[in-house]
Amino acid sequence: MPFIQQQQESSELHLFWWLWPLAMLAGMLLGAGALNYSADGRINVLLVWLLWAGMPMLGSLVSVVWLFRPAKPWLSRFSGQSVFWQPNKQQLWWLLSQLQWLWVWFALGIVLVYLLLLLFSDLAFGWSSTLLFNSELLVETIRLISCPWAALWPAAVPDAAMIELTRFARVETTETSLQQASGWWPFLLASVLFYNILPRLGLVLFCRWRWHHAQRSQIHVAIPSSRQATEKNASTNQLATAVLEQWQDAKVVNWQLASTGALQLGVQDWQHDQQQWQQCLASKPKRLLWRVPASRSPVAELADWMQQARQQQIEQAIWLQTDAQTVPERHIASWQAFARQHELVWIGN
Image (cartoon, rainbow, N blue to C red; front, side, top):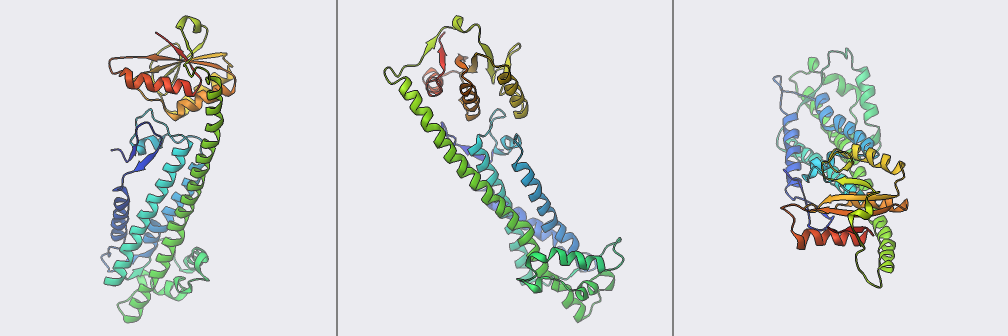
């Protein structure tokens, strides 16, 4: 099922609106499920903290690692685009920011259902552990966890007495113990805010900053490229053409075409393509002949590869492969405009 729609002839992406309420609904379901009473009438606060704060914080740390990895092939699965589609830098950071935003909405769903249950029901929390024979280690752990908000919200830092009294084996059905058992709610709320929502908001801001930076970089690079192309073809504004025999000595690169005996890009995964492309550039070819299917549209990744080859002063030509699905007035015209933009020699039939 596609989650993202892309405008035709444009790199602009849009997230479907229904993903936002769906993310919040999923968070509400997790929140309500975690607060189900056990058979003895109490909620294990350790398990709830793990689901609401511990695992989300671990997920945020994993996200930070992924942000600095060079390859993001899983984004093409999330986006619902073609398996051949790969996002450019601008699209990549936009997608990452939207993923973080979806998690924020998921966490807000947890907070919403938590506040509703606090208002309309009596939540009695306790804790139990087979390995913790006394509460001293748990007290120190809770104090360490509560450090970010201890000065701002002291009530959200459980004290040693409450921790001792709310152990499952020691909770009794008295007014005092039930009052102590309900005192865990500020700690859980603060944990969700500081270990779930705030880290994701920080990742959203970082991804948005990188997205805007990629936008500015794209504009900065596009202007001189367009100026050079305009100056080169100012007199005629015609596409440079050649016949295939003139490019027999060029290295053939098949893009989204299955073939043997030539370099193939856009068929396998992103890491494999990058490895093959770097090996191609390392061999320092003088000329590249791009063999592309006419029925597919040019993508930013292909343009990036051509830009890298152009920076190494490699001559490039494009050879269009037509089939029964080719619409000349749309497909061929689109590829010819692409060839003009990237200063490619057009191989005529």
